[in-house]
Length: 314
Length: 184
Image (spheres, rainbow over the protein chains, first blue to last red):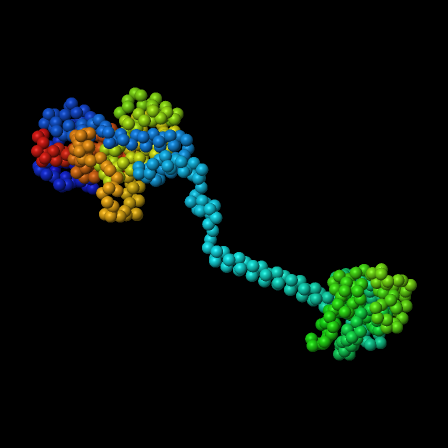
């Protein structure tokens, strides 16, 4: 027999009914739900008693957690209770409060990191090695490009320098200044004036250049001091783009198997012991004051004085 | 129910008065536990403790009368129950088969419960035999003291559906009592 209530997910009356349904007036039901138990008819007294028992006085069991509740209250008031998502029944709240004061705002990951625990050493080492390798490659590439750029720029300067034939000497104006003085006061390669010597080109010129280089390397160092003519050096210097570029110019001109001596031997001590890039602003040594006299007469312009101020002048 | 003193007690509890909070707790916790014993019988005390922690955190910002207070308390408890259900579904627990009897925490025995309030326990056991939704509605209406509209809002149902469920639950309860030999 239906009771007029709609059937649905909240039960249809077939949940283990032990006996015939009891007709419960809606008014009585509302009185029971609203706590108006005195208005319930006597025939429903057992039901009223049951409902009254649901709201009966508290038992000791129901109040035994008061101490924990008070502890939670104190902890929260003091700001030490901040994790409501964890069950607090079996875990004493006092313990959580004691541990949570200084570390409450830090995540577990942060605490883990702060203890010194880091990633596995092997992984860290591999990463460090990889970074070091990349850095080394980059540095090598940069140095290589810079070096090649310097040589290339110097070489470019020499491309437009026309080598004069064997008997032709560049004029004083072409060398920037008269004689060796113009050479000794020459600026850095980038500031070198480009000689405008009107000379021939071709195989003869290349052969002449190689011959000049061979002669210079065979009798290295300064014109007029050693046994190599300073005008030839001026010629080679003008072709190379400056005295400091002579060595590289010859290095490029000569075959790779040329058994020359080291670059340090090809410049006088006043030229930075052969380091062409650190060309000092000095005067060439005076004739006869060089370490190995070759009987040369100098440049004839009075500019073949001591180098680096250590040798006497005319 | 606290009654007219509720507003003063709530204000005092907000001002860190532990005694005031204790009064509120003693008034509400038995009803809360009884409700939880019906809807979450295995974890009633755990959920109750979590509920109070949650309530304490929001105590300063709560505004309302005693009815609102109770609605808030039981709504919080109900959400904690749902969280517990989700959590236990994701993390099933192992049975304590290999724990000796001496290691099992002592719980109050049936004798003690019977001595404390045999009528209340019996009534709760009887309501627990009802369909889940009917039992919850009856507990919220009778034990928590919430009216139909509040319960309907808590459960996401219409007031009519809540009323129907409550009536049907009471009728079934009467039937259970009749079948148990209790004269109606």
